[in-house]
Length: 148
Image (cartoon, rainbow, N blue to C red; front, side):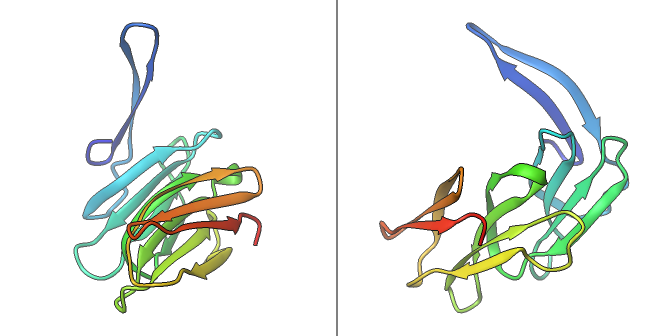
């Protein structure tokens, strides 16, 4: 990702193969924090307007917007992208409580939200069939039913 551009790439036995670049000039956001393309070709951006909480935006292959939803916490990070372009992310509220949620293009509200124990940052995780694993900075490991 670079600005409003997403470039496809892959690794073969000995080198990185750079593919095509898709540009989304009408995105209208200030800063892309993270981005990707789903299996179905939808582009997504975790974006910040410089103030307040970030947003997730989805675009079709032609660059037209599909949906946008505000993330209800600061310091968000995308952990995984699942089926149907559902984005699984975690972040912290102003009270420093970590929380994870699942967002789907076109919906105004998260599919689900789960607040974790303690006051620590989420450092990573993984999505496997039926479960969403989350690791926290203080050594916690959570298994959340992905279809909550």
